[in-house]
Image (cartoon, rainbow, N blue to C red; front, side, top):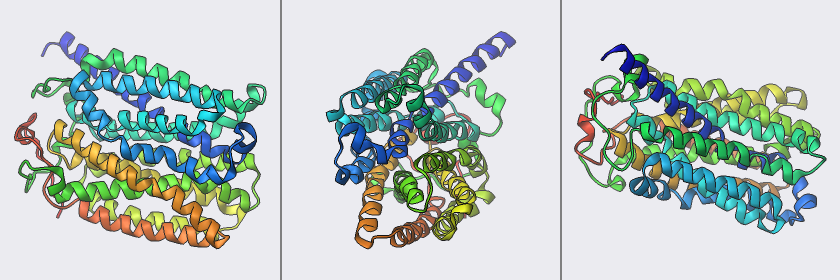
Length: 432
């Protein structure tokens, strides 16, 4: 390859990665902006307080029912255009729900559907470009950065915009629209349109070293069969769903819990932002470390145990230690999300399988996760305190550890015979 062609290839790969990161940043503010001002919604939108648990559940429920939309759109219009369309719908939903109070709930549901449609296609694009762990890490860090910005900036934006909470929520439509424009610009280079991607490795693989698809040699690749018959697919789905259930339960109610412990509304929102911000390095590094089988053996089950301990720590610590404990919880929780995304790439045999496994793990996983905010709120109402809620979440984190143990064992998920030969000897791993 001559130098000029090499530069063109690396520039195209860089544009794809930049577009993916910007899209990822936009896939959490729609949720965390609402979580950060949950106690203000009754006055600003005349929302019945009894509907607050439902509001926290709606976007996650939308995730669960809209999983198949992304692959369906990608098959017909190409992956880049499918993601761009999802971002345009997200832009519209953010504006409508903020400016028409009666549409706060349906607008939040539509925003969740758009987020899910884009989210399930990110691993497919990463796999098609043979992106390294750094690709997945940067995308998962984008999720965390968006979550932190949404929670941390909503109240400063409200003050800057003359006290209008509606405008502070609607302003997030602008970066969503920018994400749509950028992914359209990168669409010809996404590597997974309606036709199969070429098998030759892109320049990114030459620059970035070992890819997630080139982990240590495989002992086994599953024969092409429906996902429902592949145990690895179910293990990855369980891991993704459980960590998502924990994440959304925490982000929906952490600020309310902290307020009940004596923090002001502004301080509680800032601590919620800190929860996401503290986890940014972990969300970046978890996929990178996961490409090393020896680390993965400990990382996959160990994260669940760590989340359980961190939840108990937040529950029992005094207010003066909440900054530290919320930071620890943010680190281990974000690492779990990064690993969940990485497992979709690592444990699939090719781009098509990664896309389908992404749809299954995120679709069913988020359907499970939708129970998190609702169950946490119901437990808190029934018991009148937070102990039962936090202990239940800690017990769930231990189940997450078991799911992680199973997800890294067994054959790779494979839906087509070409997966095993995609690119230069895939060499997928089986961790023993």
